[in-house]
Length: 174
Image (cartoon, rainbow, N blue to C red):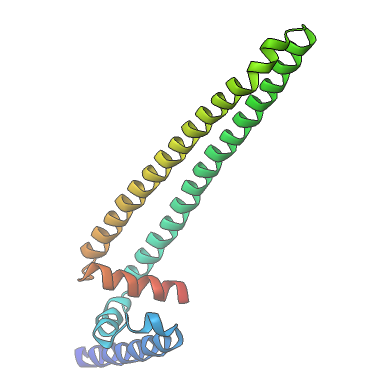
């Protein structure tokens, strides 16, 4: 009875390997070289256990959700900057109009230079905030990648980079 189960498993393994090789032939050539037989064979062993496949699929799904959330945070910051800039420009126009209405031509004449400096300072600050945001995003993505690699290593997937690349490519193909 054990040999029947063993031969069934072996047959499933060969079928899985054949399917992986067929999938590998369908992807662009530049990625095919990253999926050699010595990667596909152990990958077929791992994929026989659907638990591993589901865990990796969920890791990829979490990555997509994280990336979407980070993109939304970035867009929120950029929108906040746009609103702040529009508000400052409106305030500048109102200050110039108020100075002109009050007959303070000398003040109105100096305001554009002052306003230009304020706008330049705001743009510098905004650029720094966006740069800091990008840095935080990269650090978080690096941290998440390390966690994913540790999870895939814990699952017994060996060489993390190649394994993970192979699984991610296959998950995206399915």
